Length: 367
Image (cartoon, rainbow, N blue to C red; front, side):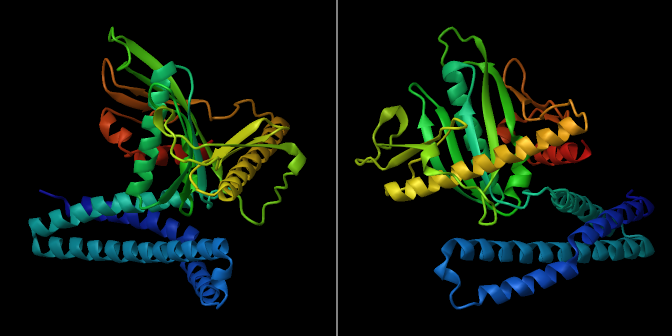
């Protein structure tokens, strides 16, 4: 029999957590921001600057949803507590079971919202640029990089986040050398930044005719999208710009004009490229945005390194080998930082990585 006292205790714990989340999110401040954004969104000349308009409307949509989500959780928890009292008074086991199911669902939803409150870094609220590249492991590494790319795109799709692939460099036999895509959602950077590092895959290689086990590696880089307030100036004499014809898998041409753009930042050696637009000018503008984002992240890392040196922090960056995916001789995905693991490798590779990301955010905050 479901214990009403135990359910009541669970409800009290959830209430405390939700009260803490409410304090951080501050509904009064959220309402004020919504009113301010609605005023700005009604300005006649808003769409004369499409980039600003898109950013503003995206933020408004997000903050409205966040406010509604918080209010909805508070309502549902209050209703669940009433349900528990009612079930206990009437001795109704069926209603108690219903209350238990609702508390379980609320626990997951409140935990998810609590994770958002941990994203308080300087750039955490921004959209993200994600780059996946193959590392050691030859053709298996290229195939692994493509599997990771799909995993992240599926994760974004599951969350209703808009993505745009800027550039894919295909490997000769299979898979990709690298790919860069934008994630257009508030807090995308803070959320996905914990995925940065080296991902290791162990499996029977589909490219080895002797069926031997192969270990391969792919790297993930996540940087925040640059905003107008960021002072990232890049002199033209620091750039080498190359134009080339876009290509698809196996070198197949997908564009008959030299519209793809590759930009090399000479002082740092950073190389970015874009081939998703038909216009060379559009590709160059997009590539420059990616370059500025990478330079912004480089500056942030250098500042962090100076702070760590001053306080004697020798732990170093957590963005090295961070997760292992084993498909043979057993099935397991394990995060090397948080110790979170699962045997459901198919679900993980299909984008169900919420548990890993939540644990990564908590781990980073605790460090």
